[in-house]
Length: 77
Picture (tube, rainbow, N blue to C red):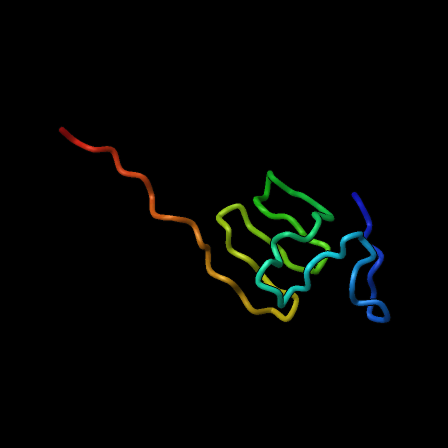
């Protein structure tokens, strides 16, 4: 597991370029610190937990609903 050098004293990571904050619209671009595919989630450097269904849990406890596109439907002739 990779450790990200952030703490309460240093809230932003030291990656170059730095990872986007949890409040940024591109928060999913942060580096993965821990990945648990068997459980369906990953922890990002900015503290966001992303789920395989594209839902998110933010560090403040708020949630982002999954933002997948609609399911593909087979055309019936």
